[in-house]
Image (cartoon, rainbow over all chains, first blue to last red):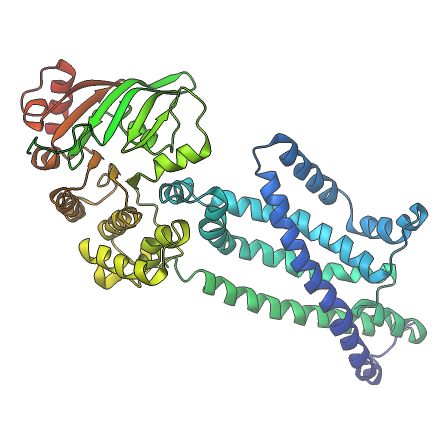
Length: 223
Length: 257
C-alpha cells in the first residue's frame, strides 16, 4: 500500500524523537564512550605489558568481545543473565554492553597509537630521569592522543549509530521512540527516515568536533 | 690541560664492560677513565661499539658484565642491578642524542624544564629562570616559546643540549650530536660543545668530527670490534697513530672516496 508522506505526523514526531535522542541516545553514547575509553587505556596497557599472563588476558578479552556480535552481547546481558539470577534494567544492561564493546575496539587504537610514538621519546625521557609511568603520562600519551583522534572518532560515530540496538532490550532511545510512533500509524518509512536524519545530524556535529580536536592537538606538528 | 687536578681518581671509571645483542658481541671488555673537567672523544668505524659504550653509561643498554662508576655511584653489572641503583647512575649523566628526541608537544622552554620540574621536583619558578639562562647559553634565548618543529636542526640539537644540562648532571654524553645535521649547521652545535668544555664540563663525545677532537679533546679513544684499540692525547692518536687499524680508519675519514 503506497502512502504520501504525512507531514503532519512528521511534525508531531519531531518532539518525541528529539526526546529519545536527548534522553536516551546521547546519554548512552556519552557515558559508554567515556567509560569505554578509560577501560580501553587499561586494556591497551595490559596488552603492552611484558608480563605474559597480563597481556594474554587482554588479548583474550579483545578477541572475545570483537569476535561476537554486539546484539548477541546485549541479549546475553539483558535476557541471558536473569537465568543466572542476575536481572538488570535496560539502562545498566546497555551501559555494560556498549562500554565493553567500545573498550575492545578502542584498546587496539590506543595500543597502536602508543606503539607509534618513537622509541627515542622513551629514551630521552629516561635520560632526564623519568620513570616509565611518568613517561607514559607526560610524553607518550599526549603524542598518542593526537594520533588516536581520527580512529577514535570512527569508534564514536559507530557507537552513536550502534546504540539503536539498545532498543531491542527495551531501552528508550531515539530509535525506540520511532518504532513506538510508527507501529500504530503504519508510517514506517516516514518515522524511520526522520530517525535516520537525526542520527546523521549528530554524526555531522561529531565530525566537526573531530576536525577541531585534530587541529588543536596538531598545533605542534609541522604542516 | 693541566694535570694538577685536586681529585686523584677519575670522575668516570669503566672496567671490563661487556655487552652483546644475541650472538653479536658488541663490547668485549672496555676500560675507560675520564677525569673531571676533561673531554673524551670516542671514535671508530661504525659497528665498533662506541655508541653502545655511551648508552651503557646511563643504562639505556644494560651491560652483561663490568663496572661503571660515576662520582660516588658504582654499579657492578655482573650482578643483578636493581632499579634504584640504575636510576642513581642514570642521574649522573646528561645525554644528547644524534636525532635530538625533543618532546614535540612541548615548547622549547617546557622541554628544558621537564626534567627539573617533573622528575626532580624543584620549584617551577626557580627552574624557569635557570632554563632561560641555559637557553641563553646555547644561543636560543629568543626561541623559548617555540615548538621544536619550528626550529632548524642545529637549533633543535642545542635545545637537546640545554635539556640535558638542566638536570645538573656531573657528566655530559654526546652520541654523534652532529651526524644528522646539514653541514652548515654542524658548526653552531660544535661551538656550544666547545664552550661547555671551556667551562669545565666533563664530556664523553662519540663523533667523527676529527677537527673537534683535535681542538677540544683531552683524550681520544679509538675503538674497533668492541675493543679499545688505541687511546691517548689527540696529538698522538690522531696525529701519529701506532696501530694499523687506527691509521686505516683515519685515512678513510680524510679521503672517503
